Image (cartoon, rainbow, N blue to C red; front, side):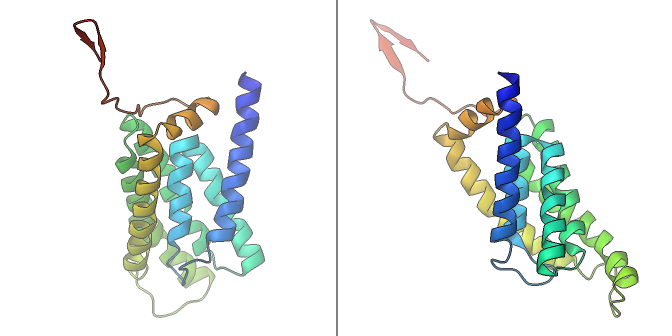
Length: 189
């Protein structure tokens, strides 16, 4: 069973990397890639912080080599991906904390780290350390909102828990059963 869940985790990681590379051009302008943040949060919730970090790194490297994207593909993804997974686990499975982790990790930390990378390594002039903050925060809010709605929907129908269970992940989020069964004169919850 453990061997099966490890294989499924790797397959899920590969699918998320492929989807991240394919959908990243949607709504993308330099410093604004909301679909990458969607993938980061989904990966954090389904696979955890280390897989999410690996996923963001692989997507960034592939985008840099094959799409000519600047190093923002890495600096604008890895911090949020990891922090998203950490906060999701620390909050005992609250999806909103995965989104908050992405906003803080990418929108603030990643954007500030992007300044020296782009100014020194890429020779961009006229930048300040706050240059990327507005666009990174906007991108994380767009991607985070989509991820929150998507994962919330999966959770409500019980699919998120099934996915997490099949991958051998810890299941924090249990669907709320509002249907009460009546047995005899007693109610069971």
